[in-house]
View 1 (cartoon, helix red, strand yellow):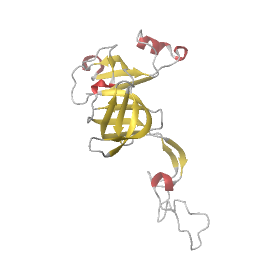
View 2 (tube, rainbow, N blue to C red; view 1 turned 135 degrees about the vertical axis):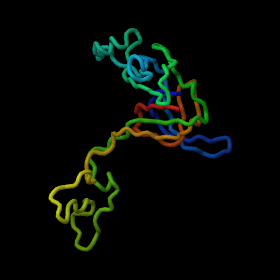
View 3 (cartoon, rainbow, N blue to C red; view 1 turned 120 degrees about the horizontal axis):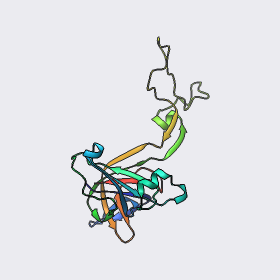
Length: 205
């Protein structure tokens, strides 16, 4: 299984060999460090824990310092697990993984935290149509409408209402790597991926 961590930068366009333009997202994927290798015998499952990013050493607690030992100080830890096998991972603690494992045409899966949009109404959050613009309508153009009715005496569970929107973990599958720039440690991935500029993204292939 191929995997790496990166930071979302911006979107651009890439022209393929046929001269067709493809929208692409640029991801800065610097080398990551293996901080722990989990096996079925010791942890109950096989996985690889990796770290990336920098952090002020004064803001790292003792538990994390003991876990990292001499590997350095990192801001982000993530774990990658291959569900197709329980075999021990080939990586070792201290190994560095870079983006050279990916090549153009690879199909990847990208996971990240989506943009937070705060408290939103039902029109934006759920795509409601709102009320009519005429026929006596005054202040209910974007209201949700009735939430009860009949013999109900309570609001049913999972009723779609206004609330916090965004900041969810989103996974987008079947994206293609359209270009790999090893000199600048950047991957160009087809289409859009979740998150704002600077969001940490997990790429698996």
